[in-house]
Length: 296
Image 1 (tube, one colour):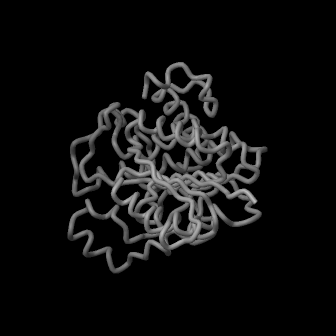
Image 2 (cartoon, rainbow, N blue to C red; image 1 turned 45 degrees about the vertical axis):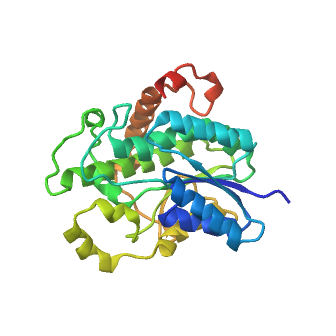
């Protein structure tokens, strides 16, 4: 029986790491994509040592750098002819707003645009799998991202206002994740692909390392383990007979999301903006693109 395949972004730490461990234990062939090569290679070595027959590898990729995203996609295409699970898990919080090398606000560039571009390239492999899953790590913070300000994506504020401005930008990146899921699910409707987002809960991960120490002190008692935070993600990848697509999940079940996340006009606007930003002419058909490499 052919092994199922999975690509997990941000899979070297946090809930991504827990998801990688679970998928390897269930016999998946897994590729980990993350920025930190030291952590990624250490995890690969650990899994190969602890799990007999484990098929797992690491590819270094900074999702904020679009050229690296294209290179990652090409490496996956060279390795596999189908992709059973595309786990778009990577995310980050920056206490001061800044831009990536292409000029987009860093959290949005990494968490949304990088994943948008990666999915564009890998969608043919996803569609080739008999029961493919696309799972995106969103957050309850998406409620803070309403009133999506496209203009500020190229000229983010330098103010912090006791972290309110960065937290709002973080919420916007997570709202973008959820809008992407809803629109992608609509576009692949009628296929076997299931696309879902989830909120992992308040997880004790490295994402809090850049928040103020007082804030950390206040929230730490309420944080859950990385293993607990990964459960819904693992469920959405591996549960047999999953029918739901375009959903927002928390604690293993469908949850209520913000009105903005259910705004189809906003989802369409974000989709068009993302295609233009990345030079994509026909989403999911990278061979037809002419501007992508130039944009990357």
